[in-house]
Length: 189
Image (tube, rainbow, N blue to C red; front, top):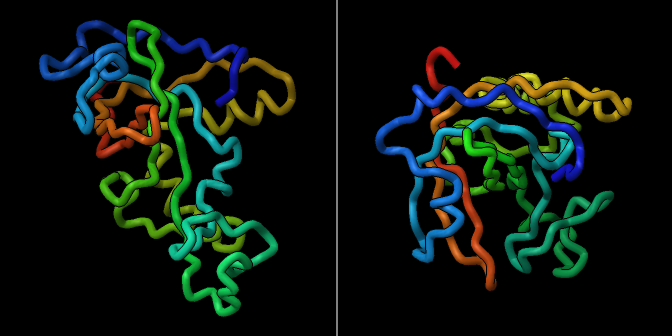
């Protein structure tokens, strides 16, 4: 994620807090894994910086990413690409009204946001990329424009909607990871 850049967002209105919502701090400090959380937050950043790179070619046999210019896994001698599959590798940075932040992955099949959008090489398949963007744009707000401004060393205020996110936590090594299960933009945000 981008660190040290201005990511000022309008404050969340406390009146939109749902009674069944957790805070990001509660999610971050929970010792239970796996666990589910529902939070109200805004998307304030995403990675990779260029959304056309939100999918990677992964070898399902050795579990390593296949680096360009290869279309098959050189480690597995898979010259026909039998084990190579496009998968999502996208992360969102969420911020709640208490200015706490959490990074969530959109890589799991459990994510309802991207369920009917197959991962693909977005640089070579504009139709798939446009379908992908149509799913993301409602929660990203103006973040693509913000990233373009940052590339020009300009500052632009993030304007993304308050959204009700359902997350799941899980252990990965000694760390905790979070994946997005679903999201619903809040009305009037």
